[in-house]
Image (cartoon, rainbow, N blue to C red):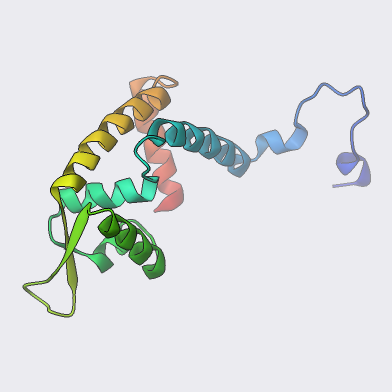
Length: 153
């Protein structure tokens, strides 16, 4: 790039964002921000974060899953996983237990309150997911998921 390409625009420019409009990561960040804001608004009354909901959902799908497996599957470090599990346990949404296969491992199960919270969270997720999907055709939504997986897997 030469100096003219990076020089600031004049006060009469069109208000566009220039070359940054072609940066994929920029649009991913904007899309993430928009979906995160909507998610946060949708979940405000539940007092649950995206990660908390993901943990509850994973435990429900895999009763007695080990804490370490949750972190690995959700791509979270040990400290983050433990902090989330501790918060959910303090709210009586899950219980820890000893693994029947390996006493060094702790397994997790939802309490009745955890199951109730997950049912309400899934209702909110359905609402949020509908908000996102209205922007795409069914085929486009499937393709978008496939393309995003290429980035994070």
